[in-house]
Length: 202
Image 1 (cartoon, one colour):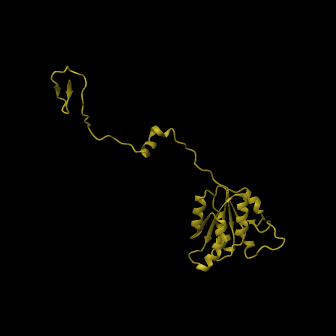
Image 2: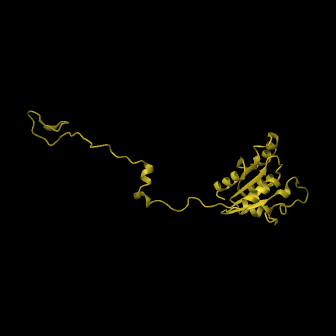
Image 3: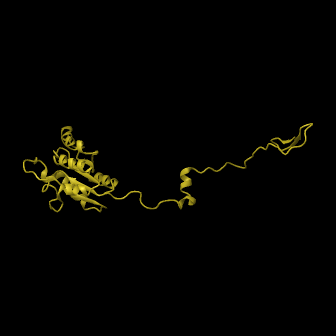
């Protein structure tokens, strides 16, 4: 049998006819190029499979100020350009617990002062964002949260002025928002809330 060693020199085994079977050592001229998965997906060959449309759509977000302090911030945010965000105030409800004959109409208003129906606004929302000031009672959060729970609309709570507030003040507002907020954030300022709304696709 004729074989090849690693130096490619022919040898012959005594008493056996030559055979075409051989072993061959593989010698590489250089390192084998390796393309990572991320690099491969960025290549021109893969680009034709890429989906260029956005991977998420803007959501209908309703932003509600729960007190006078947060109302000023919400009005400032409303001047910016948004996709599908609407801004409201419930500050008229602040400090006024509902009594007999209380109506869901009247205490919620848009920033022009027009009364709005809470249930109607929530029905057309994908997300409701409640903004409160640390130290405020934020009683409207309970009504808004219950309505959102009924309509299965997600909620987010943002608390302003947490850094300067005492633990007692912060705890007071947290106790109102925590039961009704799927996400609760202590915001550092208007810019922080703006960034949050952008991240929430408002």
